[in-house]
Structure formats: C-alpha cells, structure tokens
Length: 87
Image (cartoon, rainbow, N blue to C red; front, top):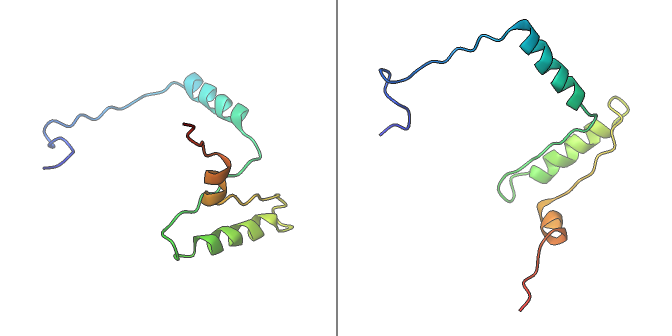
C-alpha cells in the first residue's frame, strides 16, 4: 500500500506570488543572514565521520575561508547537557 494518494486523487496546488510578496520574502531572508555555518556529520561507528568532520574543520579554518571552527561530538554534547535523575 502506497503512502501517496492515487494519481486520480492527487491535487496539484500552484502558488502565484506577486512581486511584492517575493520582495518581502527576500528581505526577510536577508535580515536573518548571519556569518555562522553549521555542519553536521553523522554515520555508524567506524564509518569515518570523525575524519570527515575534522577535514571540514581544516578546510573552513584555512586562509581561504578564515572561520574559527568548533568541534562538538555527540558524547560531549550528551555529557554536557544530560540531566540526572534524583531520587
């Protein structure tokens, strides 16, 4: 059984935005821009995700991009932000 409706019951909705709506959206997006980048690398144990993450860090820290990367792994985040049960 398919999660999609049959071809006969599917409806296609087409949105026709006005130029002022598009300009407003572009302005809102531009106002939210920051210089922060977030890269998330995930995969099974032993698949090389740490190596990929460290390679990305070296690339963005290079003189070409000049960012200051911060490496946060899952175990650090879990230990730092975990809650303990009190009895």
